[in-house]
Image 1 (cartoon, one colour):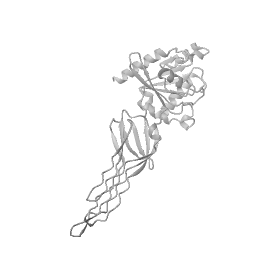
Image 2: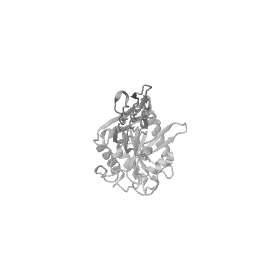
Image 3: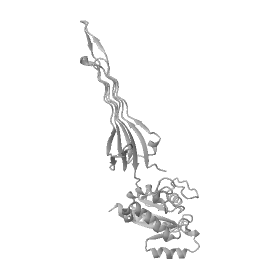
Length: 323
């Protein structure tokens, strides 16, 4: 499972305190010689192709940069706190959680943004100045959202067998429970062909009539289709959440269109799973032919039809990568 949205409290490091120190000269004159405190470190978010998902940050909800060191005697300035660089996946968007304003979209590798600056170090008592404490670093509540990157996205009605399909191809860890809506977050997996070429898959939680009104898990996860090269609309050969296979397909397309009509331009295919359980496979084929859309009849259980589906995916993905 992948976390695609998290909330964080981020704080720059506190500035070090200025030093109050005095030097007793040989002529008995007392001279102030306290040094300034160092500035606190800033928190920087940097996009990296090698960064893991946002999952690890969910467990560390309060991020604080190192503080600056305190000033010392003999005009010694405290060391500045190191900046804290937090790596996030490419495609991460950062928002101010309080006012919902966008701070930065990190869409390029090594793109970065300072989200919380460190506090200024305090002033030492040099030149008859009064020593001061270091300032607090900036503090901000953030919302991080990451669009998942994959070649092929699985979109389907409940119980269409998306999880089983993904697991058969990629051995991705899935719940695999025999009930609808067992997938509650996107799941990624990688399929490797005999020639070692790879295709990345992403299974999205199920959608159905009413998802656009917030029923089930809603449609928020459809935002990830922005990165798709191919969309597979997966249906159950024995429909449970649609009156018929064509009705199920039209429902999926309608939901995607209502979310973002541009997604309908992404190359796609219909995948009818569990064909081994169908009472009349011939009738299903007739229904699919009438739709006039590319379709594949498969069985995750027996493997029927999967080879030809994977060849289509390979051709489509390679064509898009080379475009």
